[in-house]
Image (cartoon, rainbow, N blue to C red; front, side, top):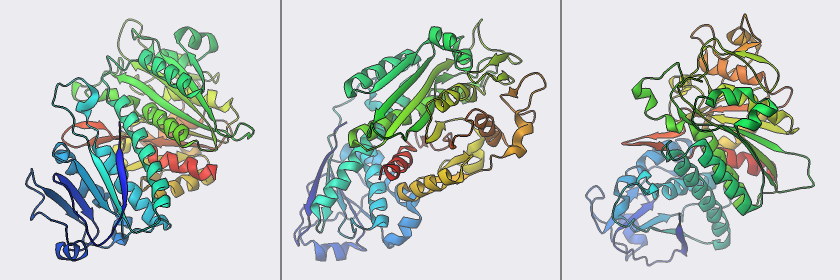
Length: 473
């Protein structure tokens, strides 16, 4: 995806081309016409097509810094009109590029705009007219070089989000576990990154039985893929990210209903977001060492499918009783997290569409966070403030131990009751991280946009990027 973006120092004359959107914090049309004599403002932006479409946010910036999601919702109808729009002009003359709150708000607006130019129909499976090329114009008062640096970074994050979205949006008959292994092998080679790929044979050989078991009924091999970026090779600090990559989830023998199964290609979103995160770090050349460990599998039905009541030995050596075959994500993550501890990480962060219950708890705008380390949670909260991507910490202490106890094995993959499902899943994961600082992000509610068409949105990539940027300083 190409994002064409120009910065222009504002003067007392401004003329906008046809088929444009003008986004401004100025309080009224008359004020704008006074400031910009050559600016033509159409009487309305709800009728398409128009020469000029405009958006005015009449409250002050402070309100939107606190309630940024109103702003995002205000811009969502841009998506409907995007094919009629050629120029998108954003007035940043009220923003100070040295003010952290202004930077955060500008980033949030621009990431929303940069993501609006991608549509799921762009994947190549729908015959349509040539896609409209969009040009962005940022109007600023001064400090061109600083704004340019900031915007270059925003473009990289925006492109990384679109990369993650495209991967997750691909249909499961194309984006198989094999597809991801080949894609990442080529990506690592192109960017000179260290990569390790284990297929079914190697998974069994090295004892990754939980990951293998989840995908053993599929016609496709499962894969464990580890990729490392070394931004400061002489430094011992390494940040481990673990991603769930279920390319399609039928629920296994605990079969989902057709309605619930329809969007299950998106069970790969955790892994897809981490691929995008890695790309943003590589493109920005952040001085930090990170490793992402991804587990790809297809959870399906067949003669060889795992059954309720089966007992498997995980990579950690702990035995797990499988009660619910539709709780497969935590089985994969159990092996990946155990493997992550062997890398002697500074922090371990796992990202997964793990439980539907988190949606009932936090809805579609807030990421669920559970952790064994308050310092790590504090750092993630700081990144949340910067990225405007919300998180909410839920408990994850030993009072939840009965939720994962089994009479026949060391652990069970689902609780014996219907209580605290998201927390029980996280507490299960905590059994595999040893003493290492660990944080779990349940993104089941936040990974998708639920508009006319459900599609991936690339979240919470900006949250994780800001966490790493802070750590690299």
